[in-house]
Image (cartoon, rainbow, N blue to C red; front, side):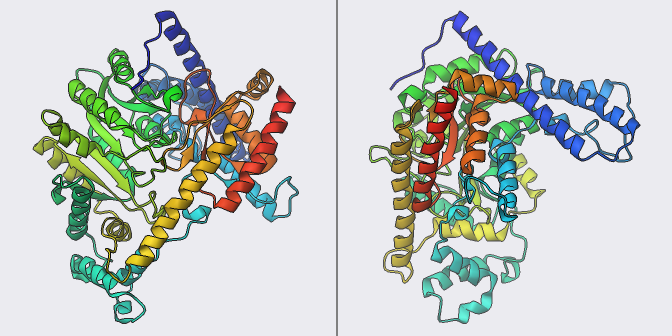
Length: 567
C-alpha cells in the first residue's frame, strides 16, 4: 500500500505558509459575511450605534483571526473579555459578548453558496429570467430531496407505531405489525409519545447489537454498548465533548482527514479544540498511510494534545473505501499513540466498486487479537444514508467499546441530560437493523426497493466519474462508495486573479460562477480542506439519473465556457 512521503523541511515550511494564507483568506471571507449581515440588519441604527458596530467588527476580526491561528479560541475569548467596554445597543447579546467560537465556526455544506441558491429559487418563483429554469442542489447528501422514494417497509413501521389503530387494518403485512407491536411493548404506556431510556429503547438497542454481530460474522456485540442517537451527528458531538479536556496544560486535539466532513471542523471550532489535519493521498485513490498519521500526530503535539482520531469509511467527501490493510494500520496507530478511534461508518452500505469491500473497524480490531482488540473505539451509523436516506427523521446509533467503566458511566450520565433521541428516529433504526427476512410477507418488496436504490446509486457513481473525467483540467478518482465525487480541477491563473479581486478562494469563485450560470449548487473543496495549491469541489451523485444527466450536460457547457473565458 502506498504511503505519503515526508517532504523536505523547506517544502513543508512553504506548504505551511501557503496553507496559512489560504486560511487567512477564508477568515476574511467570514468577516465580510458578518459585516454584510450587520449592515443589512442595522440600517435603522443611529450614528452612535454605527460607531459601536464598527468597533465591534474590529473586535470580531481579532477574535476570528485568533480563533483560527495558532492561538486558542480561549485567547480570543480572553481578549474580548479584557478589552474596554464599548457602547452597545439595547440587546443583552451582541457579537461583542457571545462565545467567539460560534463566530469562528463554519459549516461549508450549508454555507453562502446554499444561501444564494435559495435566493435564486425565490427569484425564479417570482419570474426572474435566468439562463436556467431550476436550481439543482448537489451540495448536500439529502436523498429524498433529490427524488429518492422512501422504502415501504420503513414507512409502514412508522405508521403502525404512531397510529396504533392501523394495527387492525388488513392493508399492512403481518410481519410489519409484529415488529411494530414489539417496539410498542418496549415503550412506556405502549406509546411512542413517551420518553424512552436516554440511550434508547432496549428492544431497538438489542436489535442493533444483533445486526452488528451478524454483520461482523458472529463477533459478539452487547446491547449495553449501543446508544441510539438523532442521526450520527449528535453522537459524534457527544464523544468529542467527552474528550474536550486539557491535559498537562495543552488543549485537546482531534485528528481529522483532509478532505473532511465539515461537521468535524465546525464542532472542533465550537468546542474550542484544536483540529489536527492528516492528508489523504489523492494520487493513490485517497489512501491513508501510517507515516502521514504519525507525522500529523507528532507535529500536533507541539501545540496540543491529540486525543481522538476520526476516520470516515467509506469516505466523505472523497468516496474511497479503505482496504483491510488500511484499517489495520489505523488501528495500530491509534493503539500505539493512545488515541480514541472514532469510526464514521454511516456509508457502510454504499459500496459500488466491485473490487472494494466495507470492513468495520470493530471486526478488524477483534480479528487482530490483543492488544488491538481492546482499543478504545466508537463507531457511528445512521438512517440518513445507506439505502434508506431518511435524513429528516434523524435516526442513528453509536457502539461504544472498551472505555474505562467510570468514563462510560460519565458518558451515559451526560446523555441523560438530553432525555432521549426521538422515537421516530429509533423506529427508523429498528427498520434499518431488523428488516424483513426471506419468507416474510414484506421481504420481496423490501428487497426490490433496497436493491433498486443501491443499483441506481452505483449507476450514477459511474456516470459522474466518466463524465467529469472527460473535462479539461479535471482529475477524478473513481467513486468507490458513499454518495459524492470530489474532483481536482485546474483553475486558470486568470480565474485565480479574478477570484482574488473578489476576495474569494478560487474554488469558491468557480462554484459561484457555476451556480449563477447553470443553477448547479456544489460545495468548494476549501470547505472540506485540501492540500495547498490544489482546488476541488464536492458534488453529490444523488439527483435521479435523468436529472443527473441534465446536470452533467449543463456542467460540461459551463466548464467549457469558463475555460474559454479565463484561459
